[in-house]
Length: 196
Image (cartoon, rainbow, N blue to C red):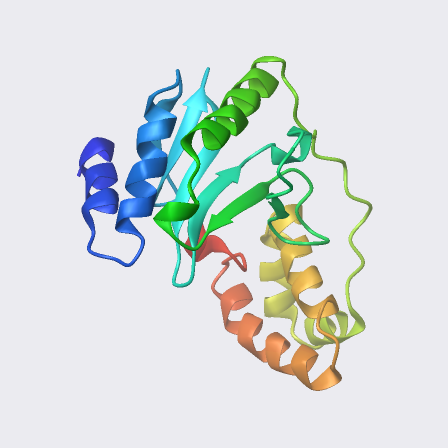
């Protein structure tokens, strides 16, 4: 199905916040942004660079600004997408269509467009060397085939596995995560391949 059909399907789907996301779409389309589909959701670009997306969830709908960290946010409405992990993205959540003030939303979008034209973006930083958790290291030492498959993965995918185990707080969680990833590594898959 071509992108435009999928976009229309996204906005015509019968859901709680349909009217709200349609209002946001009208405002976005009143600008010079180009409507595309990425990650199954409408994303609006300029010069092929992501500026914003429109989303609808169970309890809210809204906009996400890919480089929202640079917006002046005079109304104080923007939230960090994932505190501690997300550096640039900011969300503006709405609970009802009545909360949408067209002029204010348009002003935020226009500022985001201008920021993108200026090239304002956080450049990805080179991460420090990945430290392999002892639990994973011991498992790989005990299973040469698993170690071979792990070594064949890209360093990025290896890093995802290491982080997945390391970020668990309890030993029990670390061990259950290890059991979950062993078949994936054996199959030569990365942790997040199903989302790519």
